[in-house]
Length: 193
Image 1 (cartoon, one colour):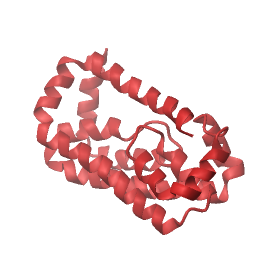
Image 2: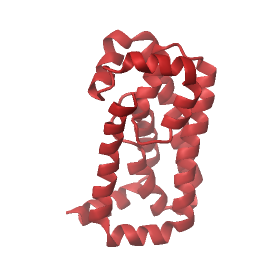
Image 3: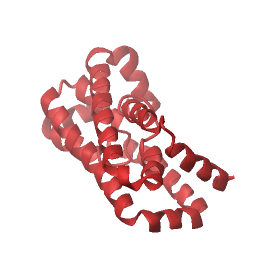
């Protein structure tokens, strides 16, 4: 079953609408959606390594714009929408502690958490809710999200054939490992905040 899903994903990665779909997922993931854009970025770069930099650029720009959407949710709609999103990710209980962390280390919170499997939308909503400087937020988001997506694209561009071979050979264990990382990201979210 995973093999068929993998082949379908690789075919869809080469589809003309894959880049707009990636932009939509990247935007949504930064403000409310639980699935990271990496699940699309990886097969898209493996399917067309020559487009790695374009794919990383689309991912970065859409993620930063989506981060501004998350910032707006935190700044303008925290009580109605932001609280519900954070509750979904289990981040509401420790929100007061996060406020103190933001006052002291806000820039570093954005830079570090933007690279981790911790859901980025928690950072974007918190940045808006705590009225973190918007220009610093955008600059930090560009740096951290760009680093994440360009480093992944570079690794896939450079080692693409080897990575694709490993994926095809060990698809099951790799899939379970990625799922474990996502779950660990949610668990870490509870402990970090």
